[in-house]
Image (tube, one colour):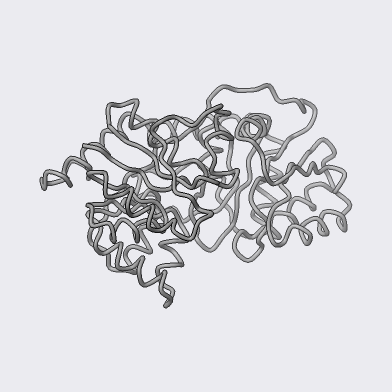
Length: 357
């Protein structure tokens, strides 16, 4: 069984293939020859050379689509990420579709060529792997029957780094600033109110997103910009890890999707209390247990819960410990890889995949 993982969104494909290979699955990665920094394994692990099991398509040539399809035809099974199920469908090889978010939540519903082709690709896939609760809702809207729920193997580091700001309560807020989607304005107004009565507090934000200037304007108008550290939007993985470890709490978003994203799961993996918004019913169906986050939605809720955590750091630590335990139960790498191995074998042999349920 030779598996091709096609796509490397935020280096997920690289980590996934690495884990599969460590567990005896003959897997290789297909990715762009000239990737974005966020999707380059050399940035992720500071590699001098790419391993031999990474294959490339030349994304600077107009023929790249033909390269992708031609490469796919050399493998027994394709695990296609984001929009690459379209090419897997054309290749004629059996494939697993792996949506990651906006592809199944937005693109597939659009009445353009990409949306229509992706819809066809989902319906022709041997299986669609749903790695998070919010994807289930979209799959149900599309009336997809060939789905299976498996969390993704996670590249996280549990080694703690001492907080460099021991005298300051440190909040790490790495979410991009897009008010309509992320609800950044709710959090920033709440934080500004908290600042009025708290001196020893520090907010770390990333300069990223369409509304970053509006966000910075709020902080300046409320005269709390002197308690804010602004970092560049492109961080090496190691630097990002250090910020997670320094934080007393992590803040994600208060969106319409009502689900944990990459930032939320990373916070839980580091054992950090997470301030965000989710719909608990999504998580009961997917994990059988609700993640122990500080769940809030309105500006007032954010204000009161943030203030409570600042003045009750013992509670903060307890929530963080519960978060890490939840993550370790639900993201056990060996269990997840075993499920993927069963899935691949069932597709290629034509046997039932009932053990994945």
